[in-house]
Image 1 (cartoon, rainbow, N blue to C red):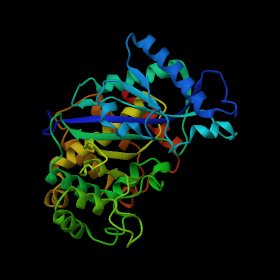
Image 2 (cartoon, helix red, strand yellow; image 1 turned 180 degrees about the horizontal axis):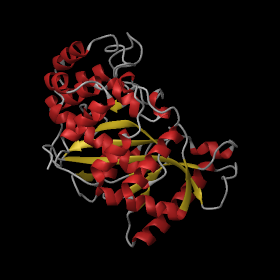
Image 3 (cartoon, one colour; image 1 turned 180 degrees about the vertical axis):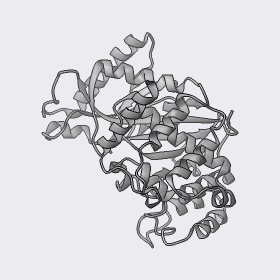
Length: 361
């Protein structure tokens, strides 16, 4: 059993339509039509499941998955996400392939052989019975990671994760999907961070350790892009710590998660599980082993060493969980140290499928 037990939540962005229905016609009342589609999907989903496991929510603003009341309910939630397109586009945009949807999972316990993997698989298998799905370079899969129920990330754990994020910054680029490497919503916490981009690892660690509270750490890891524009952090970094900040007067509480934002959109349960396994496993390992001394002595900032680092927290495990991590790192080019990976998302999906088939043979 890993030293740190975690909980996870997953957000899946896709375009959807009924099977064989064709692209939604660009007629008025786009928002109303997407709600009707979601209501029909919910009815189908819950009938197939034999109980109410999916609900629609269009009452909150975009990203309702950031509301703890949703993820702790035990339901999946379907909503819209303006990161991949407003429902209003359906009224006048001929390029729209389908309804822009986000599926938000309930909170799952993350540990070997826990039911979260079956929960993700069952969700995908059910929605694939109802509709056709499409992704583009704006679609993403987000993974939220928090400690087990009743606990919060300690200051030391957050600093360890931050240090590991900085240390493996170039290595990440070798495994990221091409569409996410330079995306506006997945900026590097180091290379695109004016406070840290020109500093060595030891200098970054010094600043991280000097942070007096979580808010200071977040403003260091996710500052506004322009110097002099204040300390307000931005959510749109590859590793998002904002949910660990102190709640404002308008907020009842923060959900306390570290969010991994660099996974691409997915169209199969197995591809989705690969990225969720990575995001959760990295945070789990980093919270335990992300000290400056350990990182510098035991690892080098390459993709191969990143894999070794992650598996440190999973060394007693075997089977599909570690197979999924192996699939993510499989077939990388030799130029891992330079942070170069495959140049097309479709090539990455093909590598995944080939490796999945090989492991299942």
